[in-house]
Image 1: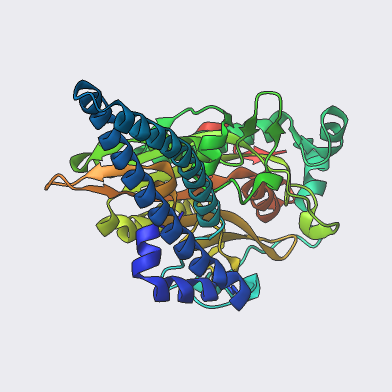
Image 2 (image 1 turned 180 degrees about the vertical axis):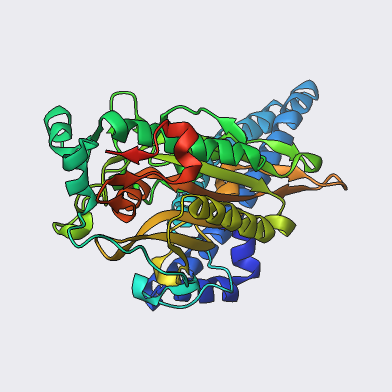
Amino acid sequence: MLQLKVIREEKKRILNGLRKRNWNAVQLKVIDQILKTDDQRKACQKELDDTLAESNRLSKEIGQLMAQGKKDQAEQQRAQVLAMKESIKTLEDRQRTLAAELDNLLLSVPNCPHSSVPKGKTPDDNKVYKAWTKPFPELPEDALAHWDLAKKYNLFDLELGVKLTGAGFPVYRGQGARLQRALIQFFLDEAVKAGYEEIIPPHLVNEDSARGTGQLPDKEGQMYHCTVDNLYLIPTAEVPVTNIVRDDIIPEKNLPIKMTAYTPCFRREAGAWGAHVRGLNRVHQFDKVEIVHIEHPDRSYKAHQDMLRHVSRLMAKLELPYRILLLCGGDMGFASAKTFDFEVWSAAQKRWLEVSSVSNFETFQSNRLKSRFRDAEGKIQLTHTLNGSALALARIVAALLENNQTPEGIRIPKALWKYTGFKMIK
């Protein structure tokens, strides 16, 4: 959530940022509505404070008037105080209504893009930040897509998933299950080596947690909702892990806080028919290792680059062709100030598949979370929050299977040998 103070003091920058997100003139009116509602709230609060002060003054005088034998005057002031109580109740109700209206308006506004974010409306307008310049894998003439490889080698079963749950819930089997487990452990070990604390969070969160990281009210349609208990299955470990610092004031010397977590992720997002959503290209449940930074504002963009390097190293160790895209304003997530996407080359499908988003949210999440730090001078400031996929497994598995198929079987990258216990899927 954007800070109200920032909206008021940097209105022009905020409006320009929202235009970069392709907001039109009608949508931009919400900024003036926010400021107007805030002015009304302040005026109502002042009137409430003044009325309370006057009521307290008159109440104190009633006893004095009675002691002086001025009963009639005391009764008049008592009647006046009673009338004020009704006015106070009305003003308190008005104040709550305005505060709720202001909060809802603020929650409807996405983050302001960083100045380096390019303009654009669709993924076609994203900029290639780092291109792949080496040769792409050369596959046999009879190369198969990963969903056919899965059937040939009995690695995962989508039809069985439909039987057990529904479409988009794969069942991993045999060497496919071991490959999945190997990747999870590899990603966690690499994150711990890079200084991240491993976390095992809950897989369900409450409304406050979902709201804190921006899933609510923006993405409620994409989350599985357990209505009886009003809990949400997590769409990513970002949600519970980032909320660890909700309502905290962190000593500056403790920054940065770096955390990593493996979780299954659950997303209801519906996909269209076609090869681009076949197999593991788009599923409703998938495994992912997440990295999260809670950072000092002065260092958050350096941390952003550090996270890019970490994910790049993972891709290199897995021997996968990849590229990095800088997302344009129209393709960024609601809460992000700047996002880089990693895409892996799927050799059999001959297309790029997104496998990671690495984002800096600046103070957008921390303002909702009330995640703050106390600097050396004792001043309280909002932290910056960042997160990234390191990595999402479903499409990584798809690319590994397709890119490494040979007439003898599917080759396993050397970095995974000690985790899988085998060098080839046969």
